[in-house]
Image: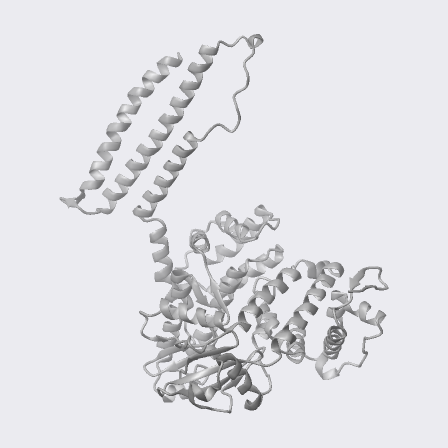
Length: 564
C-alpha cells in the first residue's frame, strides 16, 4: 500500500485497489450532488482526491438545496447503495448521537434494490442446498416476495405442502460490502485526523459496530438463531407468532423459514375492514416487546410497522430478526436504578447510572447531576404509567450529547427500540401509552431486586466475602523488628492476636446483623409457616440473633478490659 501526502501536510494511505479509489470518487460525487461538500471537507477526503486529480466538480441542483440537510443526507445514502443504506439504518439507532430530525430521516432509509432474475438466484440456492431446489421443494415462485440490499426472498412449497420462504444472499454482495467497509475504515481515520467535531462521535468505533452488525446480517444462520431464541422465549404468549426455521435447509447464505401471511401493520384500512382491534394490537405489541427486553434480555431491536404482520384475532406476526439487542443482568439492574432515580427525583443516582454507561469517558458529575435534576423535576409526581417516555428519553439523549457522552450500543438499541415501539403503538392507536405495558414488568423487577430472598442472598454473599478476606494471606510480610525499635516480640504477638480476634468479632457481628435483618423482613412480610399470622421462622431468626448478639456484648466487654 502506497502513501500520499496531501497539500495540508498530513499523510494518508491510498486505498487498496483502483476500484476502491474509484468508489471513493463516486461517493464524493454523490455528496457534492446533494450539496454536502461540508461533509467531504470535514472528513478530509476532498484534499486527497484533488491531489490525486480525481475530484469531479459539478454544480448543485437548486431544488436539492431547498431540502433540509438531514433529508439530503438520507437521499445521498440511498444513492450510495446497500452498504450505506445499512449504515444509515444503524445510525438511526444512535439516538444519543443525533438529534431527532436526523434520526427520523435515517429511519426512512429503504432498501430500493432492483430485482435479480431467478435464473441468477437458482444457482445460489443449489449451491447452498447441495442439490437442485426441485429435489426439496415442490414449487418455487420465481417472482420475489421482497428484495433487500443483502437478500432476496422467494415463496416456496415443500413436498409436505408447507408454505415457506427462501431468503437468499445476493450474488457479489460480500465482495461489495468488504470493499465498502475497507473504504469506510479509511474515511473514519481521515475524519479523526481532520475534524475535532467528528472525532467526538468516535467514528472508528461506529464503523466497527456497523461492520459487526453487517457481518452478522450477512450470515443468515445468526438471524435464524435469533428468531429461534425469541420464538422459544415467547412460546407461552399465544398471540405472538414467530416463524419456524427449517434448519435442514438453512445455511449462512440461505434461510428457509415458515411463511406467515397477514395484513401489513401499515395498512390500517385493511385492518379495520378485517375487524382487527387496533388498540389491542398496540397493547400486545408493547407487552411482547417489554417482555423480550426486561424479562428475557433478548429483544427485537427494530419493532417498526414494516416488521409486523397482523393476523386474525388481533395476533401479531414478527419478522426480520437481523437486528436484535441483548441486555445483561447488570444492564437490567441499571435500568431499574434509573427508573427508580427518576421516580424519586434522585439526580445523583441518575447521573451515576449514566456515568456507568459512559464507558470510561470523562464525566463532570456535578454539572451532569444538575442538568438531570432540571429534567426529572418536570416529571415530579407523574405516575409511571403516565410517564411521557419518548419525551424523557429525548431529553436524556439531548443531555448526553451536550455532555459529549456516548451510550453503549446495547442501551442505544434499547432506547431506539422503545421510541420505535411507541411510533408503532400510536400508528395503531393514537392514545397509546408505551409505559402502561411496561409498568407491571418494571414493578416486578423492583420487587425482585428488593425481595427478602434476594436481599438475604446478597447479604450472605457479602458476609462470606468478609470471611474469605479474613483468611487471605497478608499482602506483604510483617516488618522486621530490630532491637533498636525497643518493641517486645511477646507484646507484638499479643497485639496481632487481638487484631485477628477483632476481625473475627466484626465478621460475627455482620452475620448476626444479617440474620436479624432477614428475620425482621420475614416477620414483616408474614412468610409461612405462620402461627397467629406471625412468621415462625422470622421469630426464631430474631431470637437467635438477639441471643448471639447479647453474648457478643459480654465478650466485647471482656475484650475491652484486656486493652485497659
